[in-house]
Amino acid sequence: MVRVTSFLLRRLAQSVVIVLLASLIVFCLLRTGPGNPARMIAGGMATEETVEKIATEMGLRSPMLVQYFIYLKKVVLHGDFGTSFVRPKSGASAVAGGRADDPTRAERARVIDLILDRLPLTLQLAMMAMAIALSVSIPIGLFAGLHAGRWPDAAALMLSSVLVSMPNFWLAGILVLVVSIQLHWLPAVGYRDVTYSILPAIVLAIEIIPVLVRSLALSLGAMMSQNFVRIGLIRGLHPSQVIYHHAMKGASVPLLNMLGVQLSALLGGVLVVEYIFDYPGLGALTIEAVLQRDFPLIQAIAMLTSAIFVVINILVDLLAGLIDPRLEY
Amino acid sequence: MTVIDADFSEALVADEKELSVARRIWLETRKSPWFTVGLGLFVVLVLGAFLYPLLSGADPQVMHFREKLLPPAFAGGSWAYPLGTDQLGRDMLSRSLVGLQISFLLALAAVVLTFAVGAAIGLYSGFHGGLTDQLLMRVVDVQLSIPPIILAITILGVTRPTPALVVLVLTLAGWPTYARVTRAAALGEREREYVRAARVLGASDLRILGLLIAPVVLPPLAFAAVLDLARLMIFEATLDFLGLGLQPPTPTLGTIIADGRKYLMNAWWVASLPGVFLIVVLLAVNMMGVALERARNRVLGGL
Image (cartoon, rainbow over all chains, first blue to last red):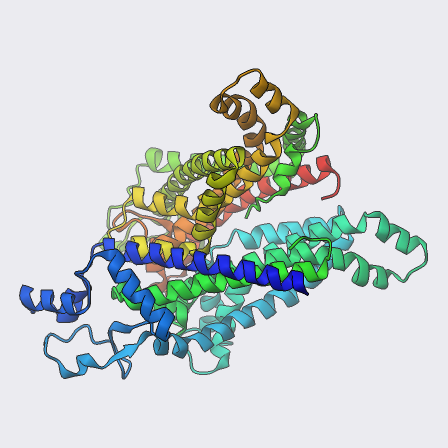
C-alpha cells in the first residue's frame, strides 16, 4: 500500500509538471501564430484604436510569460479558466457583430461552463465506442490467440490490417451513405437522442478494434505456449480454467497497455469524428474554437486533454501493477 | 498501424548474436507471402500514382463544366473519365492519383525527419544518461501529452498551411516514440563489452555512438519507420480533410473526400473512390508490417 501511494504521489507530481509545460507550449504557439482575436471581437468595421484598446483590455499586449503566469494563477488559485473571447453567455457566437460597444459583450460565457456543457456528450460517445470495441475485439482476439498460427489467427490479422487501413473520415462517409441515407437505420448528423451517438461510436470503435485484436491475439498466443499453461492442461485442469485464469491474466497486461494508448488516441479520433457527424461534443467545440481564435477555450481544452492523457497513463500503470505484481511501480 | 515498442530493443540486447538477430528477422520477413503481396501492391500503386498523371495526359486541374459529376466507367460512365468527374468536372482518377502522390511524399518526408530526429535524440539521451537524459525524456513526455491533433490544429489552424508546416506537424507528432525506443536500445548497449572496450581504447563518444551503437540499434527501427508511413499518410489525409492541410486547388485525398461529402446523395464516387486508393496503399504497408511482426516473433521465439 505504501508502495502504491508513493508511486501515485511521484507520478502525480510528474504529471503536474508535464501538463503545465504542455499548456505553456500551447499558450505560446497560439500567441505567436497570426490571427488577431481582438480584431475578430471588434469586428471588421472597428478602427485600429478600438482594436488596440480591446487587445490591451484582454491582456494581449503584455509579455507572453507574464500573460501565462496571470492565466495560470487564475486557474490554480480560483479554478478560473477565463471567459471565451467570442461566445456570449446565451450560447450563439458573437463574432459577427460589428458594434464595438455592444453591451452584451461583457457577458461572455465562462470557458469552464462551455466545456462542462459539451463534455458529457463526448464521454458518452467515447464510452460507447470503447464498449463496442471491447465486445467485438475480445471474442475475436481470444479465438485468434487460442489458434495461434492457424487460420483464425491469419483471418483476424487480415481483418485488422484492413480495418486499420481505413481512414475514419472516409469510413464515416461510407457509413452515412449506406446506413443513414440508403437504409434509414440510424441518424447521422447532429444530436437529439442517444441513437445519434451510435454511428460515430462505430467509426471510433473500428479505429480501435484492430489494435486490440492484434495485441490480444499476440499476447494470448504467446501465453498459450508457456510452460505453466501447458502443464496446467496436462495436470487435468479444465481448459477454460487455464485460459481464463492463467493465460488471460498474463495476456491482459499488454492488452491493458494497448487500451491506454488507444484511449489516448480516442481523444484525437473524437475530434475528427464529432466534426464529421456534426456531433455537439468537446471535439466539435475544439474545432470551432480554433476557427474563431478563441484562445482561452483552446487553451483550456488542450490542458484538459493532456491532463486526461497523463491520468490514463497513470491508471494503466497502476492497474498493470495490480494484475501483475512482478511489475515495478 | 505498426506498433513500435520496447520489444524491438529486445532483439538487440539479446546476446552476442545481436547483429544476426536483426538480419535473421529481415530474412524471415522477406520469405513471408504477406510481405511479397504487400510490397507488390505498394510498388504498383505508388508507381501508378506517379506515372499515370504523366503518361495519360489527363490534367487533374482542368474543369469540364458540361461534364460535372459523371459516374465512373464501371457504373455507366465513359472511359474518358475512368473514375468519373467531380463537382467541377475534373477527372477523378488523375486527381486521386495526384492526391496519393502528395500524401505519400509528405508522409515520406515526415518519416525520414521523424526517424532522424527521434533516433538522434534517443541515441544521445540513452548513451549519455544522467541529467541530459532525464531532461530529454521529460521533453518526450511533454510532447507525448499534447495530442497530435491538438498540436496540428494550433499550428495549422491559425496560419496558411504549407507543405513544410504539414511535415513539421507530422514530425512533431512522431519523434517522441522513436526517441523513447532508441533510447531504451542505446541504454542497453552502453555497458556492453564492446562499447567499454572501445572506450578504453580511447574512442570518442561520437565515434562510439556513430560507428558502434547506431549500426546495431537503428536498422530494425528504420524498418519500423518505413512501416510508420501508413500511420502518417492517414494523419496527413485527416489534416487535409479538416481543411488544415494543403489548400485547394492542390488535389489532396482529404480535400477531395471532404468536398465529395456534399454530393454523397447523387455522386457517391467522389467521396468514396479516392479513399479506396489510400486504403489499398495503407493495406500494402500494413501487410509488410504484419510480415515483420510475425518474423520477429518467430526469430525471438514467442513474444
